[in-house]
Length: 170
Image (cartoon, rainbow, N blue to C red; front, side, top):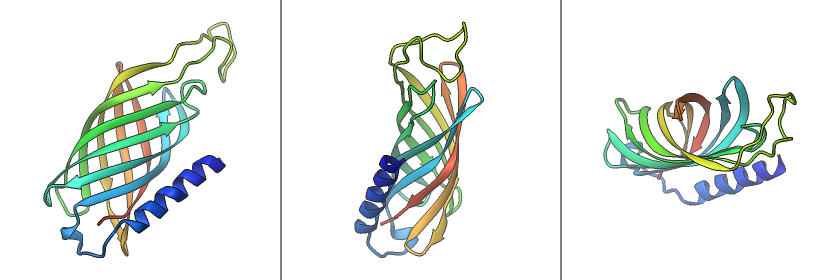
């Protein structure tokens, strides 16, 4: 937990040091820190990550996202990295569609949260990931809070990501 808090603090410090005061419509760069939960196959685990969006104009942007869910997949952990295109139908609403990779860590055959005859291991592997997302920016001074929901589609399964991003536009 200390590692997660340290990463979040460094990220917030970086965001705070890299912005200039400008009108919301003038800002092009939107770096943020995400904290939330990911539900995969009815198991919900803590997630955190970083995101960045570059806005081309008031309606369109593109960005990168990295997220980590350490306890997912029987403790093997999942890392997600993706690129997205964003549409802003209003000043505060953002809709996204993205493509990337999900990397699942290795699990030994004896590991797992539920020990049973059905417990089995698997090697580390990557799979293609498609994401649909929506967020709403709530301005708070020079920061924005962005409640976010996303659906990830990986290998015929759907996972749900819900949380909040702290964003420092500049």
